[in-house]
Image 1 (cartoon, protein in one colour):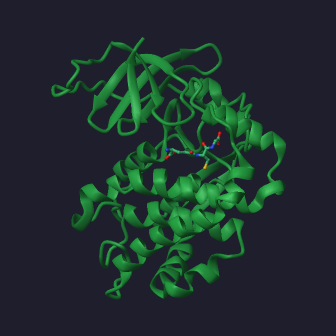
Image 2 (spheres, rainbow, N blue to C red; image 1 turned 180 degrees about the vertical axis):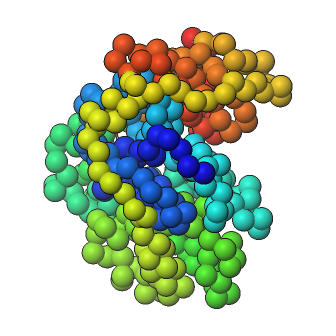
Length: 309
Ligand SMILES: N[C@@H](CCC(=O)N[C@@H](CS)C(=O)NCC(=O)O)C(=O)O
């Protein structure tokens, strides 16, 4: 479906979560606009749009702002249904894999990467990620835990490998799905950061071939835009999300309620706004920002808190 606003991804090249979305652009052959943001805060052109949500990536379509890869991929699937990320064989599980790949699997991968990079990790990056997590980013502790992290990474890889063991091309069968995109992020991150992946993959040849297939998908076609130009688009556009009530909301929330939405794990900055649309998997809130004007910010529900504001 064509849209009059460009599909903008705010991301940075080393971001594994952004890689998921770049691959979806490749898979669905979507033309997109790349806005490269700094790897650490501040991000003065992006925060007026998100209302303080600071994790990467963020997708922007006009004055609609999509936070978290769960939410971004659902919107991309809605606009570009082919090829689907949710084949029948794993329609529900495909989304649920994020709770494995993005949390336990990813935390182990991050510790392995930064523990191995050790004193090459810049001090400003450490300070920024300590703020993000509200906890020490203890590279020395990660370095001493490398043997444990290697064990964890291997155990997770083995799950991918046994899924592929019958010779299938993709984790759910002969069609690629979100399961592949979600799991691949961790392999991609180690591939790009450490020289040890080929050695680790020696015992997992099916996973190595799958990695090659995943990489071949590419990133589709993109053009570059500055952060300032993207903000200007949001400022001029009006949000396009229609009001949607949820008759089954277990807490009786409804459009018009004021809430604060934040992740439940890290980057826990509450974004305040008025509910516009909600469902079991999605909440959209309207904000009026002194710089960006009226925007609607979208979040997933799994892994997010919705608090009265
Ligand atoms: N659950 C989030 C996780 C995103 C995430 O943790 N991204 C990392 C970068 S890959 C991040 O936000 N780092 C801190 C930052 O960029 O400010 C998602 O799926 O989008």
